[in-house]
Length: 563
Ligand SMILES: Cc1cc2nc3c(=O)[nH]c(=O)nc-3n(C[C@H](O)[C@H](O)[C@H](O)COP(=O)(O)OP(=O)(O)OC[C@H]3O[C@@H](n4cnc5c(N)ncnc54)[C@H](O)[C@@H]3O)c2cc1C
Image (spheres, rainbow, N blue to C red):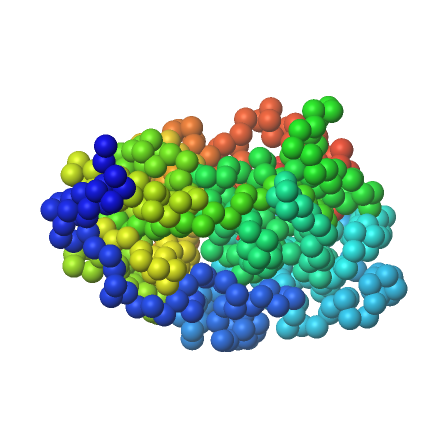
């Protein structure tokens, strides 16, 4: 019988024999201060700002005053696209009222002076989305501190036909979290209490405004983790995560929020409070209504409290960063990883060489962990388990076999937490790097894994030299992030991309939104992924729960169905 030590020795000799390049990366830059995008930097921001030393309000103010043209290239390298062209497509619902001074007085009477915000700078932040692509013109930002206050706000707005936008960390990527016109913004950021945590079951009950990273830190101290993790964790709120049914980096291991969210408290448009805040694993008493609100993007109700099942924190995390020669190798690697790493596999992410290029060129402090040569594809594999030496051996054996099989061309295994962070920084930094590179057209597609990369190649052929087309994402979940980068926004480029991207996805029975939602960007595109019958039922549910359509208008459902 082979002892652990002999197996280790054997693995080490394979390591040497089969790849001189397969090394422990001791040379990496250990600076990981900004290793997790949006992480930590703005933990305490009430109005979420992004992550630069210059506040977004400054960019936007400058942009506003710059000129009447539609496209701006900002001094910082970020671009802001004026929203004007969209308002010509979407019409303000004429049945909505306009805000008046009596309304402001009412809100002050329930929230107090300081949580009724009319300050221009703060409104500019709250009106502008993360991509700087959508901007509303709301004149009012409300910051409730309790469910009761949310209920009073909605009851009042409903009676007055005042439209509202629920807002979390404002990191959404489909224009769902900002007003289209003058909707009242209701930001949940002050509702960030942890209500209870049960160490036996791992069930966390908290308010919706808790920032994901803060919740993760709290759980870390208790020996648990959040079942989801994403690049925006330092700003996004758990209420926003649930409302978008965010996927992220751990979905391959812990499944979607439809599985881990056990209960919700939701305030409906008329102010009534639905208490579904159960902490039960099993409850088959009729229709499970909470699922309607998970992923409804604030169009059916405002989520105020969440009960969520959290997994135990396991002591051993290993991360490998690998180079592959083609997409087919990445796919085969995924199949093998699922089979051979089994229960310890916790992330399987991929990026192409163009993505790597964008990160290296635009994100300070990053470097390719496999510097000797550029590979066509990169795969990041994370394992999490309870036994470090066992997990490491298992992972090493898998990597060596994959190398023998020709699926991996080169690779590095992180030796410590700093290297783990620097590997993740590359994958998580792609969105930020793209923003710095210029204009970006983002598509978030679910496709059969074997077809997933074909659309990247098809798009490259279509756009030629006019754009850089990159593909990366959650390969383990069949989720491609197709991003197209150009020096500046150009409607001619957009016309080349859409509707082609949606038609292609629909023809391959994919989804035009894997995890980001529909928001404003894709409200009118829903038919590419859902039949008219299904959309009609969605519209009926919307009408039932929000008959006056005040909740996040113009989002999710097609504008043609607006009552
Ligand atoms: C760098 C970066 C990386 C990202 N990575 C991922 C990823 O890996 N996976 C992924 O799925 N997404 C990702 N996203 C997108 C985004 O972070 C998620 O959609 C996130 O869940 C949004 O949370 P938020 O609090 O910022 O919500 P917001 O952006 O504020 O709102 C999103 C939507 O939810 C609604 N909403 C917010 N809070 C509530 C509430 N309490 N009740 C009802 N409705 C509400 C809003 O009206 C809006 O429609 C990323 C974004 C960035 C910028």
